[in-house]
Structures are given as structure tokens and as C-alpha cells.
Image 1 (cartoon, each protein chain N blue to C red):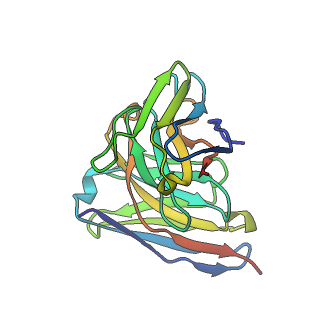
Image 2 (image 1 turned 60 degrees about the vertical axis):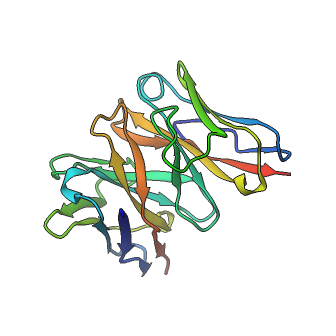
Length: 122
Length: 110
């Protein structure tokens, strides 16, 4: 069955860095684009970034552009999110989610991981 | 401020029907399909409706989706206490080159 498992969360000081991983199994990872979505405590869902199946295209939310980098290693079936210059407002549960359908018009997020908590605090 | 606008909360009695609206623009809902996500406290979201009105396997037909112009609607009939959750709409925004979510609607079944 399809599984996405996030890891690498933790507590980091403002201005620090952290790298999240998302290990995929149960499907051909290299065939799918993957999103990162976050949820601050008590708040709604906020899309963070997306990477195409072959890594050739990446999109970012304006709130993280220039600070976060999404990448993937298809040989390891793993997605990454490198987070630099972290701020208190980046505190959230971070989910990876698979993009279904290659055409953006039809696409949706069909499988989600359980999430990894990132806390930015001094 | 979310790109897609949803009512923050809605409530209804068991057995009744509710609709949750999601308002956008021509750069998102107006030209793309909409999906809906259900999230229970402390758990990951799951897709409830895809491609505006399709139900993934395992989702009961009490849940339905529709779209008109730049607005979409999630309908839930025969409300059950187990439907109490947060509901989010989502779609791609062509102008932003970004995935966008609504702010979420908290459903309370009284």
C-alpha cells in the first residue's frame, strides 16, 4: 500500500536550519510529483512547495521562497525539504502529499503522510 | 488570508444536510478542478472529493461535490456525529503557480 513517512522534525532556534525527509513506498516514486504542506498549531492547511516527478520543476509558496528548498532522490524513494533561516512562524506540522494526475487542471493530493512537527523557538 | 474563501464554521443536527462553499477566482476554481479534504483532530488530511465531484474508493455517497463558475460546494447528507471534522477545498492557481487551500470549515454536528 502507498505510504509516505516524514522524519527530521524537531526544535530549532530562530535563524537555524533543519532538513525534513519523506520516505515513500508502495508505488513508483519516480512517476509522481510530491507536495509539502504545513499546518501551524490551531490553523489551517498551507501549501509550501512542490517538485515534479523528475525534479525538473519546483514551485514554492511566497512565504518560504528563498529560504526553503525542495528536492528528491528517486534512487532512494525520498523527498526532502531543506529549511533555512527559520522563523517562529514556520512552526507547524509538515506533511508530504502525493500529487495525483499529471495535468494541474485535474490534480489533487491523494496520499498524505502523518506529518513531522517543526518547532522554531529559542 | 486564504486565496480560497470558506466559512469558518457550520453546524447542523444529525440526519440533516449541509453545504460548505469555497469561493475563488478565474485563476483557480474557474479553470481547474477542485478537491476537498477532511481532517480529524490530530490526524493527517484525507481526500474526500477529487476532480470537483468524484469520490475516492471508500468515501460514502453522502458526500458530493459541485462547481459553478468560480465557486465550489461540498455537500454532506445524512449528517453523522462522525462527520465532525475540518474540511478544506483546494486547487491549482494558474497565476500564482501554486497550490491553494481554503481557510477550512469546522463542521459541528449538534
